[in-house]
Image (cartoon, rainbow, N blue to C red; front, side, top):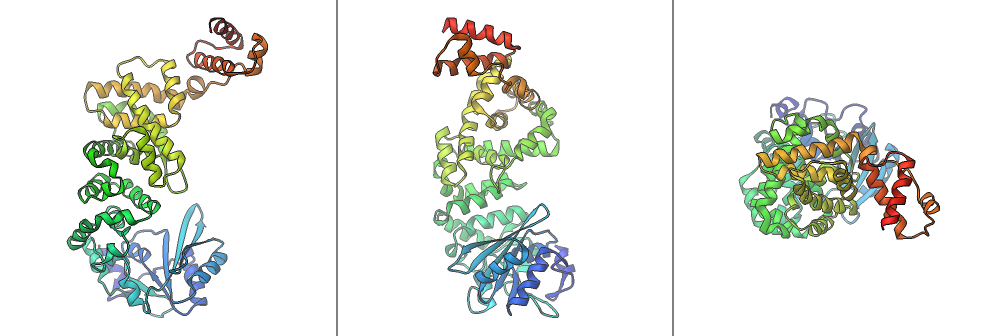
Length: 457
């Protein structure tokens, strides 16, 4: 933590805190021109002390926080989002190039800055700086800089989690992201208060949990969630399945880490090597504005011991989107079907049927199945089958999985003298499968196929 010493001497700032011309700098300049008491606080200062880039800027003001946030949004060309009108908390969402920057404004909680900092969560976030002073100094009444040096997450008060139970997960998330430890007394409070997490809004729980599962040391911190009963408080259905849940999650984490690091050394994973870039691109597709397919796969791995419909319900309870919940259910359903293909020759017809049913969730189902299969011949066989499926999906999609139709319904009805109805749909589905299987290549072949099919059905 030498960076802390280089940037601050006796709480006096020795390096620029707000880069000149940056969005944070422009926000600070506008605020100091429009209100007499403005403080920079929270995560931005913490990240600056650590020498890390931050995309979130937190300001505390003594009055009119909502009106100031609305005016700041107009000034910066951003969007005003009221987060808590009663407590005077608002967000300004801005875009700087391709980056999204969040500027949060809060009304001082209490009559003084000291009272405000006393109400914050962790000492490393309870550091402030009053803007507009000639010689700015850090205000650090709870020794947050010392905890940064010691790499500790420490609660400001013994009531930290009772005041806001979401801090239970936030403590874990910060420790995981910063690679810090949770201070012993804070951990004891966390273990005691873990059941309180049930009082937090589900969407806020989901936000923090997803961030924990993304971190490089996610298996360690997920086991911490299990050990402290936080995870079972969030997803009670998992209680009898914690062993398999952790095994599946750790397997998926290992696989994704191997893909990102090009370390596909395990025999069963070498089959994925030709598709590494394709897989990473697939997993990086957004499922909403905050999450990606990789996030859904990690969460589903934790839930994968549950029946498919319970997986869908658990995701919905955590306020994942309807699409993400359906995708999660499909991943588990088709992960189980993949084991039936072990040792079989993966024909074009098998490939078509698998992806016709699984859709794009078939890729995640493949990865989960590989992650859950033990080392040895069985996993090797599954890896060989996965290679065939992945090759078709990424490199022969329009040939094997979604071939362009050779005939439409009107042509079929006209040629066969059929009336509209389910039979036409069944015939066209059979034709698509035959085409995907390589049995039908031309419109003439297609006409011959539908005539033969109609005569036997």
